[in-house]
View 1 (cartoon, rainbow, N blue to C red):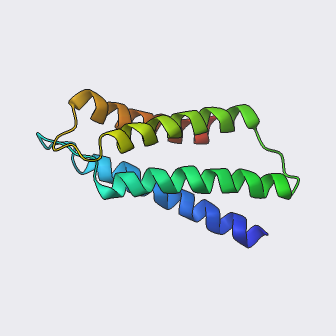
View 2: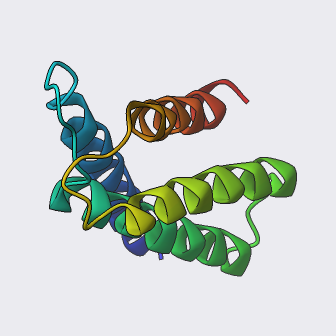
Length: 113
């Protein structure tokens, strides 16, 4: 089961990289969009995060449930923002910065909490 957990963790980190990288490459652009890297990245993060919690629970390893709940809430908010704006020609600056800052906040929660 350790292999499954490690594989899910790698996929979770790749999802974060896709989301953050997809947003960051547009930082200097005048018109920003929700690109496929961002959309698939957040989807990967939500799914692999839930699966990771399930695997950890199945192995009777300790899980910090409040931290998991906060991270899930932030990830779902990012997912809704990405999904709702995926077909726009240009995403408003406030929404773009919200996606970017919430992504950084989720990483910060994961590392520092």
